[in-house]
Image 1 (tube, helix red, strand yellow):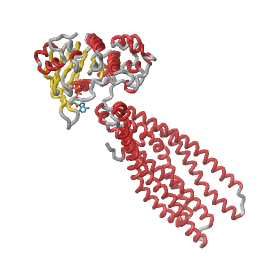
Image 2 (cartoon, protein in one colour; image 1 turned 180 degrees about the vertical axis):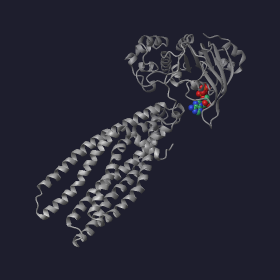
Image 3 (cartoon, protein in one colour; image 1 turned 90 degrees about the vertical axis):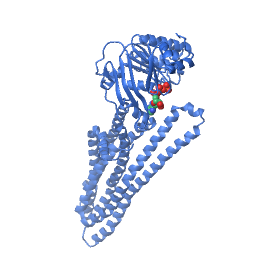
Image 4 (cartoon, helix red, strand yellow; image 1 turned 45 degrees about the horizontal axis):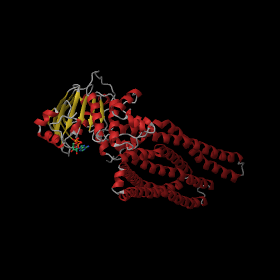
Length: 582
Ligand SMILES: Nc1ncnc2c1ncn2[C@@H]1O[C@H](COP(=O)(O)OP(=O)(O)OP(=O)(O)O)[C@@H](O)[C@H]1O
């Protein structure tokens, strides 16, 4: 993804600064004032030289000069502080906006992106806005204003010398115009490389044990180093252009200084201008170095900022979910009726159809199991119910209302979803249990812990419920994670419970206990279960056999063993035929 720089990039950049505009304006005004105080110094110096020549008193003027210098410094300090403060606020605004945006993105968008790269946009690119939205913007204004004022004053003094100065300075302008886009390009490349390196690192840390077990450390380090080197190379490229642009300022000012000294000296000798004018003009030239330097520095910072804004803008271009308000009225009854009508779906335009006309009517109470070969589309059905993806055609209705017409927050508020690999979040066990309902009472938590046979685990843990479960819950066993994920879904008190392979890592005793919990839950809510182990689902009220994206049979275990060869084969391979398991 690459957002071109256009007006909207500039608008975005200014958008980050807008909430801080008062502080920036005030801080900028102070800096301008200090710049003007500096600009007044040559005039006072000219007056000083004139008076020295004519033998007049200079005490007052000296006091004025010192006063100007002190006041200029104090004002500059205050202005600087205000701008630094505004800069921090700009980063804060950008991070808050990005966090909100990231969490509102549609699931497929995030699945397509690299988490490490998104992270680098949050941590690194936002930091680059720090200076740009405040100091650089202000320096653009103050630098331009000071330059204009000085140029006007120099023009008033001597147009010939001004003409020489401007001719030399024009060279800086040309170099700057050529260099600025290169700085932006190199900075964008550097930040992209940082993003890629972050993504690579995230990949490694996310599968640390696999990397170690595969002995891939050296390969991964080399890849990360390559990414870091790419970033370094682009950074050096940017630095080269920056130093060229900034260095041209010194060169131009020094060249014009020499030209003005030579030609100005000749003009003094011919009496065309007095010596004091030449001295003042040279002082102006000396001071002009500062605002022009400011302008160039600000220009290059702005380019770096524009590159960062472009990367932040990429996230804005990713699709977001409709904003949920939780406003849909929820009927008080238990369970939900779920109706799939000829649902077709593929994950992308170039990918094969995963669901090829699925129609299922799930009544409000009871347990419905989905079985079928790997890749048949079982988990995809759950993802569509959660509206992580939208069907390409057909309808899914919940309580008689099309899912698309539900308010997203209300819809998900009805559902307890346990994903296939039962991911936990880093934090304490309690954080994980109440994640879907932070206000759950302790008694309720205890009750669910007992049902899911987690009570003995909690007793064993050093800090009980407050024990950390580690990144993605890796301090717990696979079976414990599955039970915690189920407990989390139950504590949410959903009307529809979606359980995707939640017993795959449980031992027989725990599997049986969980089966009982789910059967009990199915008396008060709609339970949809995906399972490879048929032992988990033989007692379901109905079993849907899904194969290659179509429903090939529906019935009870006993009916399907007789009527559906594929199911009968599953049952046979799992030693369930003719045997009614508990
Ligand atoms: N995010 C995705 N992008 C592209 N294709 C996907 C994505 N998720 C799943 N698929 C593909 O869709 C098909 C159905 O996947 P799904 O996870 O629904 O199958 P499943 O029946 O649940 O399989 P399993 O029993 O192995 O979990 C598979 O071929 C899978 O490769």
